[in-house]
Image 1: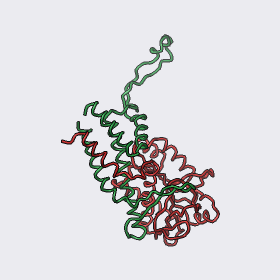
Image 2: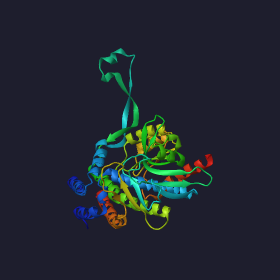
Image 3: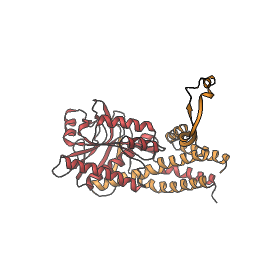
Image 4: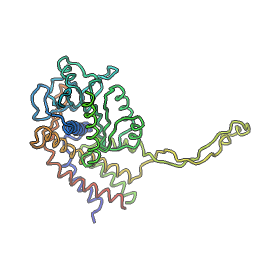
Length: 222
Length: 162
C-alpha cells in the first residue's frame, strides 16, 4: 500500500513538470483564465450565427494571438494585440477584447477582463485615442481565477463595477465556488457563474448559453 | 491519519509548492485559513427586561432566555481540512490551469480556421521588456497534469479515509 510519504514524493517529482514556468504568479494563471473565457464568448457568438474573424491592432489577420497581461487601452499601439470581430447579418458589428479599460458612467476608467463592444466605438477609440464608453459595451466579464474560494470583497467590488459600467450584460465568472459570493450576487440580481473549469462541462455550457442569450438580445434590439 | 501525520503531510505539501515557485498559492490558502470556514451553530437567543427595575442590579439579570436558533458562525479549519485546501489549490494552479490553457488554445484555433490549436502569447502593455507567456507547449504538459491529478486524488482519498 502506498504511504502518504511515497505519494508526496511522486507529487514532488510530477508537479515541476506539470506546472508551466510562466504560471509562477497569480496574474499569469489569471491571464490564461481570461483567454479561456474570451474563447467562450466568441464561441457563443459563432453558435448564435455570427461570422467571426480575428484581427490585430494594425489591421492584420491574426496568426498568433497576442493578449495583454495587464489592463491596457484599446487604442494602444505599443503591441500588436489581437481581438475578435463579430458580425451578425444586418446588425451592427461588434468586437471582443481582452483586458481593456472602459469609461464608466462616472467617467472613471474600469478594467474589463473580457468585453464585447460596438465596432464603431472601438474604431473611434483607435482613431482618437479615447476610452470606450460603458454605453457601447454589450458584454463585460469580470474573471477571477483563485485556488481557493473567492472572497466576498471581490463580489462587493463587482457590484460597484456593474453599477458604474451599466453594461447590458455584466458577468462575474470564477473557477472555484463560494456560497456567500453566490448568495450575495443572486440577491443583488447579478449574473454570476462559478466552477467554470474545462472539466465541468455543465457550468461551461451554462456560461456559454448565457453569452448566447446576450447576443440573441443584442440581435433582437438592433 | 493522526494529527502528527497530518501536520507532516501539510508541511511537505507546502515545501513542494514553494520549491516550484507557487508561493502565491500558499498565500491564497493561508488567507482562506485565516478567514475560517462558515458554518451554523445553535445559539440561545435572549430577551431584555426593561420594566423590572430590580433586574438592572446585575447585568446578567437583565437578560432572560428566549429560545434556540441556528446562526452563522466562523470555525477554524481542522488539520485534515487544511490539507484538503492545499490539495485543491495545487490542483487548480497546476492541473486546471494547464487544461484551461489547452482548451483556450483549442477553441481559439477552431474559431480561427480549424487548423489545430492556436498559438497564444501574453505581453504587458508597457515599455518594460517582458518575456511573453506562450501557450504552445501546453500539450506537452497535459500528460503530466493528468498524472498529477491522479496523485492528488489519491492523497485526497488518503486524507478522507483515514
